[in-house]
Image (cartoon, rainbow, N blue to C red; front, side, top):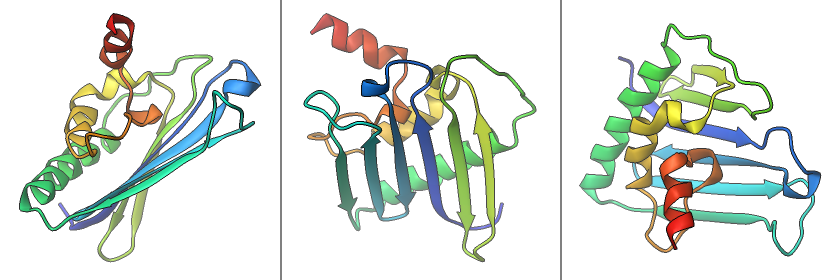
Length: 145
């Protein structure tokens, strides 16, 4: 495995109401994680969000290594599943030599539960789970509140 510098995971809303439509992006490096949420139409219930977290904590770096392995495995999947009315989840790996590998999936987030669970541990406790990383368990938790 070549050295990975950055992992980017992009999401987008699927078929639905335009006032709830969005695109979002999580960018992870060995010492930082960034998130950006861009609504198609900004409203009181659909606001833009952006945050960055930087750290020198070695545990964060260990999580980055785990995520790197998981995303590389995902990009190499021998799976061509497709769901209709769902937005794309795009994984991009940028290597230290600046080469990139990208793959789009039209699948629900539950297909990537193990990978997303690692990333969720890297998110500061006071931030919401990025839309692109949400799985069915996140929606169940919200329903119980």
